Image: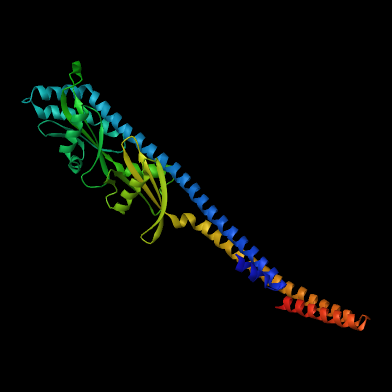
Length: 361
């Protein structure tokens, strides 16, 4: 600090004023840069809030449609015709199963249209036979042995599960229990396969989030539910772990040589995590354009101002130097005693010479 003070004191008056002016310009540039950064961060927060609100609508839509599927299973379990036929099959294993299965199949017809996302309804009996309304091969995408163990523990409650391999479908599974006399004896397993891809797309469209270059990833634990193709699986798991119980979080990062705006959230109804990826560059293009315009305008104005101030200072100090020279001449011409005149002239000339040299140094 002391060396800076000595250096500044040794400058000429012209350079001192110019240095102060340049420092003021630097402070102005720094303030503008910080303001732009604050503006960008604020824009990110607003962008996150807008997308988070949209995705909240998506999760609400998914929960609503999944609850509707569960309501369909409730209706199936409580159907009197299904209860009677399934009970008869359990109590009379050697009866005409084909006729009873046909009656059950026809009864399922009305339920498959109660939700547009239901792809198939499967009633699996204890002997492994499957009474299916819809595509019968959809059920083989899922681990039935694991599902059977899960629904045995839940005793009639619904459970949602992903397929063995990540893809477009999920299943809502539960047991059909005998309701007569509240015996709650197991009659069969109920498996309703759901078109999750169609459901997610409709949710994104209804919220306005179905944009180009966007991705929606659904996870349960470390397992991906949707989509079928992996997209930076390890990074997705890291984001989920870093959320640490927060309902939603966002980050901006570079993936595949492009910036991505990522929102990480949670669907509490089923305990699934989701990640929403959106190309960040189109979203921030306008802000970057405005930022560049501000910086260019600021640089141009500062450059012009610096040039004009430099020229003005040189003009002012040229006239000041001329005034100093005239003052020294007047002092020299003033009649005084020889001794005093010589001393004054010598002193004034030294001061004038020193001052002029200091100004023009």
